[in-house]
Length: 319
Image (cartoon, rainbow, N blue to C red):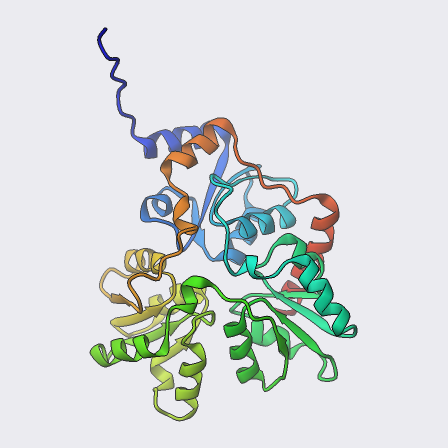
């Protein structure tokens, strides 16, 4: 019996057709693989994507990122249907604390203010007083009255950075992003010696951020050439900066949009293997399946969403 050979399809073209048929919007994080970014309607950081979801006229959102981000979209735009092509796309940082641990922490510090990084689950946000991003964390902490105890979670490196910048003592949860944690000061310094003219862009979650701040204070690193930025901040800075070379200390996926938007500039990864396997779980195959079969929906229960929305909106009021 002759074997049936099915014609190969151009997935990118089929996704475009299906997207129009479904009246869907495709949103992608800066760390997604290039082919996913290229077919997306908008690419940005987690907060930018959440705000873009609210603005979209379409009711169906195909979200190319990780689970906690999809939850944030569901919280801020409960009227939209949020589909995550792979439900296993998680986050080691968000998984570093659960609700039971947070409630126990709060019991030990009953009059404290809980500040949760946006990289947390909906359940954690629901038990928080205010959220922050890597861009606005310093401003959020500065908005808290000086006599208030602060519980900052879950990123220890971001927390250490905020303490240094504000001079505010906080209780910091010892969580970390497994990708950013491997970006050490030693490796960064070696690369900076090789590329002395390059500007250094560092995400505040990185394991090298504390060392970077120390070297800035000691004038061992030029503050003009060192910028501690969110992924969205990196995109904006690279575009406006007169510098021609940049060392980028974050997940390597961001190199693609940086190079795409700045074709005459050079970008060097601080570490070649700084790759988030969760971000790379989204691909054209599961995006097509998600659009075709309308899977997999991320819907935060109303009770949790209503509580989690308050600290996010409070953050937006401050900034």
